[in-house]
Amino acid sequence: MSASPPLSIAFLAIGLGYVLGSIPFGLLFAWASGAGDVRKIGSGNIGATNVLRTGKKWAAAATLICDGAKGAAAVLIAKFLLMPGAEIFAALAAVLGHMFPIFLGFKGGKGVATFLGVSLALYWPVGLAVCATWLLAALIWRISSLSALIAIALSPIYFFGAGQRDYAPLALVLAALIFLMHRENIRRLLSGQEPRIGSKKTNSANA
Image (cartoon, rainbow, N blue to C red; front, side, top):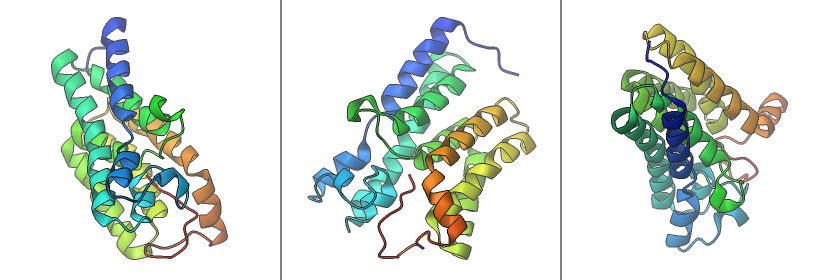
């Protein structure tokens, strides 16, 4: 089990993770693509799913990659430049930063892509398992939010089963936060109204 870092290191990791997580790549790439303010499109979310609704596929792909990369960067910097154990604090803060970015008045995305990046950086076999679960569920049900929720719900089990038991509680907390951010999607899923991938409906978001 990793030793708990001193409070000073923990706070430094939290600050690092939060600042990196707060970078609104979806907003930046949407502007760069000429699509305008993504917050005024579709669901108003800054994640890759809503950026895709602008029709700018490259911007959506870049958002997905960069939202994941900022989570991974926070974990790796904290782990290797601060100390082992600090990555747990950085990971939590990075996802919270994406959800509640200081640069956008604390109104951000839902944390899925950043969670995937965090998972890959914490322990890449589990990260790959989470990504594979997401893709498989998307192929079966073709509902983006459902696929993400299934993959993320299984992540604590994956970490625990892979022997990364320090990270399982973190994954459980992050999964709970992401489920909370998806509460409207969950309501639509239960009522059968959640749009499928490729649908013209624009009232849901994912990342």
